[in-house]
Length: 229
Length: 327
Ligand SMILES: Nc1ncnc2c1ncn2[C@@H]1O[C@H](COP(=O)(O)OP(=O)(O)O)[C@@H](O)[C@H]1O
Ligand SMILES: [Mg+2]
Image 1: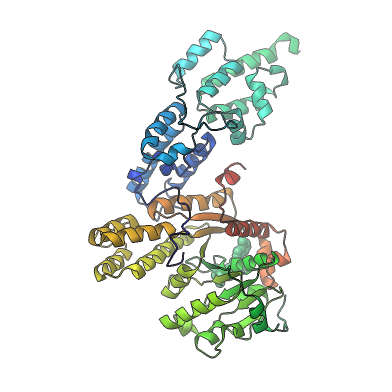
Image 2: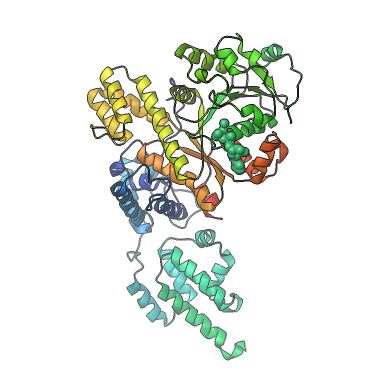
């Protein structure tokens, strides 16, 4: 903060390069790095909603009602794209053409430990849009007759969320999550706990709660089956 | 560390041997009284000196100096003695503490008129303090947004703001940030028209419709493009650190992140949230005993928090959002 020569020592200012919010990209709006993981985006979003909520201590004296509303709209818009793997991938591709550093560390869903590719990421081939709508779910559920762990796994992977991330966010032991997805009914905790686990799981990947109810039905049926008595 | 007479080490000799090229000045301010500036300054000083660093604490709260009380020492000379010329050499004003590599320059409550020293006195003071051979110089600035205080803050390598998780304190902190960099803009500006603009912008209900620093810089750029650019660069290098003190809940801890975001969106500056300090009864117990908390209760919650803050400050690191939201 010295008067002279401070520029050379300027900290790497990744976020807002003194741009008005209208001119910021989605990463700058959410204040996350370009390579942000799904979890980071989720947390940044939660924080932003708190920060700019009505009467929030950190923002009420700087922004009036309209300004806060505009910021929140921008945040929703950014989150809508960045929280969705396919939309994010497309957005990243567009962004890379005018912000090269955004492409320097390619982000890819579900590959935390693999080395980043040297050239721009190869397009991920998606047969479907990746949008998990109630219709898709119902379709899957009907096809499989009931919602099983495999169904959940499929839906989760479509969202590009790893089990690790869910575990970190919910504090549910990852081994339980694995048991849920592998239908290991015999090792699962009691139904009361399961209800809460499934609810949190569903919330994280924004699944319709009916899917979880379907899964619970299967588990309950198994619990109630004669061989359990 | 109750009041006691400590034998003075041969101070000038000490200075000869303590020639050090690496030096950092940290200034602690916060817009409002009672946010823990002196408490933090004293304990940050103690923490650094316990790491083996040579540290000088300066009580630059010329209006109401009480840093010596947090350290439990009784100063024989004060900064006022130096400012008004009673003592000519700054190393004669040093008060030793219980820790061998921690020194104090005390302020004084009795010279209120000194709270706004003249420009030349101020510059001399800043230069002399920076000349001293310590590795860390920590300035405890008082409350308010006076020019002297802002100049001290701007001349430091690291500006630290201590905030309480309550609306009044946050408002004052934002006002302080705004005053600090408008002060800096004003010092940069040479064109009287640009100067006028900055003064006008300080008034929140100005007729020019300047609401945010963005608006101001656009206005400046329309008069003098080069100056507009320079000021934009100045904004990017202005990066104060925030400590949220006396936290009692997780929401209080998150506040620093929210302030960081609000500052980025409003001022366009990058504030670093270096950590929070829990509200802790051991603090007032230690204060009553006139002993720094870190010496009195090194494992008290607030002491642990302070150590984390110091570590982030040294490493130019920040608190991670993960560390709070994951709990
Ligand atoms: N984390 C804390 N927990 C409990 N009391 C605190 C804490 N921080 C500061 N205090 C108390 O608050 C009072 C004001 O602190 P002080 O450092 O004198 O404020 P300032 O220098 O900003 O005016 C002191 O009595 C101090 O002991
Ligand atoms: Mg004080």
